[in-house]
Image (cartoon, rainbow, N blue to C red):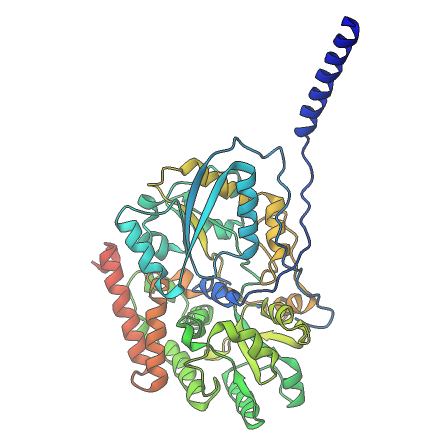
Length: 487
């Protein structure tokens, strides 16, 4: 009887050891395939990326493939990356549209794996920067805060050397695109993590190829051709462009995204602006671009309801066939097809914004980024979350699951560019950086510029007035930041 009991005990112990060993075996991530409709918050996201950059930003034909379905289940947690479970909550604030649905799915997986809950606090885009500045200035920042990248924002708006944690030593920094890393670097230290579609998120004119073909319109190469095309579209009873002015940010894209063209026409202009050696109001090409934008509105290119049109209606408007064009990211056609399957993504093609005869592809190398607040009591946990998001399998999940993304700015992630998008980059090889990312004290006044442009549309302000207001606000911001160039 004793031998039988001893045998049973030994057997049970061996069985328990085998089970324990089995728990430590890492399993490959396996994203689930349940789908959800693409949300039109994508419009606000691309906005943020562009002015983002808010994008900064960063929106397909022939053999184009549609975007991968949105998956609501994140990759399975790997035992090799599991850490000791904690019972705490990280607060993360961000502007509307910066946090995608797949990231929220990853956050749930992160909580299951670590016990750390992510409390997302999403602020309306037109209020976000004021809310963030108030929190930072009062010393009551969240554990993680979102922000746009670029020298002016990092130093002048967020003061990251004081308010953010140095992330230079994090492993994922080596895998992030160096151009994006540079956008979150101050004095040699990396303060932010940018996980964004910095190529597919490029803002370009999305045009309905069927409408263009029906009316015999070829892709315009300058503003004169663009204006003629718009007038022909109007004559056919179709609104040339869906422009959601009511959102407050979207119509601003038409101006600072011409930065590479301004730089081509006046080499070194960006550096002169940053050194306070010249002003926006001094530049005739900027006046030309704004005058053309004003003319587009006056002629009726944006339709009769532009001042009340909103971005959440973009997919519906483009699918209706009543609008020929929309300024958006290269991923927008996929979002249209996702929301309205009868309107295929390959209905749309792309060309650069032609104001001031621009033919550059304006790139936003940064975008909405995450910063760990220096005053947080949970710095280690916040770093742990950023490391989790940057794991290769999680990055691929985010890209594959988000229809408004075609690319992510990390090595080892397979892009989703379709034929039309690849052809676009081939047809327009000239690229440059958007001005909101390269000119100081510009991005922070995005919504103020939007209000001035609305006044310009109504005629109560003129293009030169808008430029003078930009200069005035830049001077105020520079003096607040004690910028030596303004002393």
